[in-house]
Image (tube, rainbow over all chains, first blue to last red; front, side, top):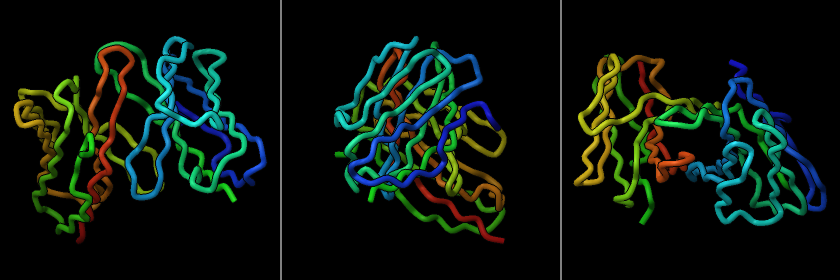
Length: 113
Length: 111
């Protein structure tokens, strides 16, 4: 399935690097989400964009900076990360309204050295 | 107290068995409820929504008890392909759907 794509799929970076994660949805949805999934912990919501406006910032450190230039694209800009930020970063999208399902991308496996 | 609590398992069952997963949530203002399935090293996918009246989809039955803040998932006639982690998920917002996930219950179905 290619409804929600994420690049890169794997990323290794040092603590002083700057990198960006990209998410693209081809489903005509108008809400997009970033989640973090660490080992042995539940998925944690990081950011929500609804109609390209950020509506939720779930107490995420400023070293994570999201960007939503249009309804199909979502970025997560990373700088000066810590080793504990190593995790699977999942993007999801949804059509607003009712109980519409969130569709997840395959995730980016991030390792911070 | 965790917002959404699940038994992490693993539940090891033989093919054909019936297995039930339970989940409790702490916020009585929760709006809607779901079960997601996540296969190893894959993304979560919606299995089914959970309604107060209970709902069934083939071999899967979900129940919600708002008074007890309790959600369940029953799987009948387990298949090998049912092996996965089952995530209990609660929506906290009526607007943009803010989902809170449990840690998941791992199911292993063996031949």
